[in-house]
Length: 251
Ligand SMILES: *Cc1c(COP(=O)(O)O)cnc(C)c1O
Image 1 (cartoon, protein in one colour):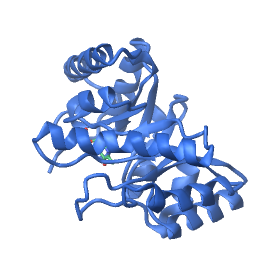
Image 2: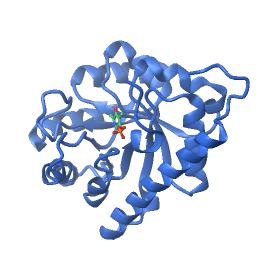
Image 3: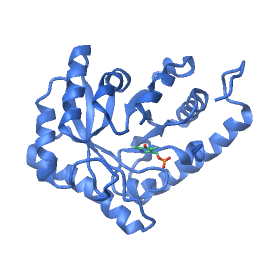
Image 4: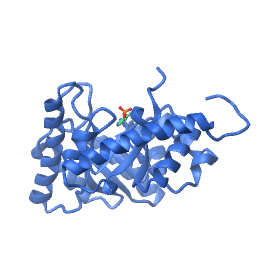
């Protein structure tokens, strides 16, 4: 982050951002068309880790100009503070938290985010619930599922038996409201493996809805820069995009 008198993004940087964004939206639209879906109903969540307030604010503006449903998603609790920047503070964009959670950050996350994508264990549900109750707010949450089986990924096993107790526990909460499932697709260049993992999330949501009578499970948060087309084809309602819009992340 460089200090500068003008906090907005230089014009050439904004143009580059717009070009990348239009490329992402074209990919999204083509996938939606193949799937017979209306792409303007899919939320484009800007994954904001490592990005400056000026970059994020510019991307929000550009997405708004293009009539998209948008959200801002932070995955690092230590970067929540940057969202209080005047460029971002009052822009009215829905804020989500998408990263792995630690219980000692639950208060910050509840204060920041209207939707929390990463409920991956009971301890986190408990911490979020306690903080939301204390703050007198209710938060939408997604249950994170490890659909790829990769050890590095958090989330419940991809079975109805593993997830249903958490969904029921959340439905009984007055401070949290389960609205769907989230996953990070298989980390492989094999599209069929990626598709299988994302398809699994949709099947699980549908089965949970039916078996629990949980009509409120509408969201499928899946798809990132590398796999957003497959995710849209498989029913994603929220795609989480970082590098394809903002460029490669600084190391
Ligand atoms: C960073 C991140 C994304 C976006 O990843 P890109 O590949 O940069 O699009 C999506 N979801 C989560 C949980 C992330 O941390």
